[in-house]
Length: 534
Image (cartoon, rainbow, N blue to C red; front, side):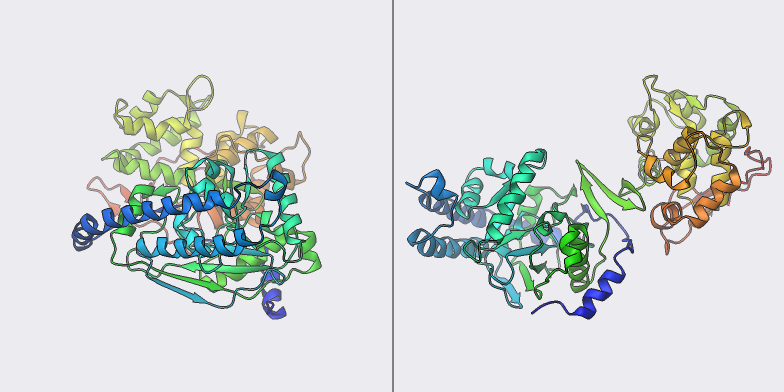
């Protein structure tokens, strides 16, 4: 059964909409109540060692079976679909042991919904969300189909042999040639009229906490054949499965999961999605539409989050930006400085004036810490300010620090922030910005000093030696969606409440979500003498 035309139309119509999600899908922190801690400790002392022992035993049984499958075969025979007893006997034996493996690990309640399509109907299975290595449980109801995996996994003892057992397609993400050969192998298998088993792919390419679907990579969709979406849910009171970029580590995942009475999992096969000719010609569109369908079935947003290198990023307009704005990270670091929040509030006005007064706008870390009333010798202060120290001289650019903090603070209007930013980067007070000055202004607002902003700057349709006055700068952020979305979708997501302030005894205010400033800037950009601290 194919996805209905109505559903396809709905998703194509909204393909250019960027959904936002509160929080970071690459972070999963597990917080236990005192009762849960006691329960895990008591059960873990009994269940964990027993289950780990049984898991190791099952793996040791699987190991020689995986080796036996290709014993005596030539390299050419190994590259062809396995047939005969090596297929029906060893496949059934390995499937049974894999089911036993997950049972002894505590997966006693595994519910399967929907119908798995045959290889002739859907050569590729796309599975999401990808939560951890334990997602391999999906292989059991799928009958141990072929998977696409990282080449590095072949070097893991036993796991590498199991990947070879089911003739996995492996790819090295760092090697372009490997990616090309992987695509060619995928094309060969899906065009073999069902001779090969289906290929199972996690299109997100990395693990998340399940609060959103991150951007699907195009690899599974390049070949342009029908795919069957498969979704995984873990309806457990304690979410112990997730193994993400930041949060609990692999040992904690095993400890918490194996220390439960049981772990539940739900695997649902959605209707086969057959691509249109437009989607066959545009794998990114194909991937995006399937992502939206799976997100709708899960009841979570379909987002533009992805991993680039080792850093999670999200696409906002024409730019790829860190998932969390740099100023938000600074706010978190401020919490670690103890009295840092109030100290920064007391010193921010001085920093604004310092930016307008100093022609170079650069200070040493110690000088900036002094302005902020922070102890320069503390490691937390260094961690707070070091990201703003750019260049070989190791000096801190005050403009980047101040504008980054103001850009995420809703107590400052966007117009005020842009006016102050214009003043900071209008070298010589000439009344306009050059291309280089505009680039540094954008980098400062986004707290990304190394960000390549050339593509979004080209949208201004101005020449290399253009002159950008304040009025045109403000108009860009009002009328151009790629500029406007930097605030509405990233720095100040719509629906986010403005910072609430709490007055101090000295009459100044403190924003509960970070640095809350409402200082007024005069037309020349300097802070007025009657600064208001809400």
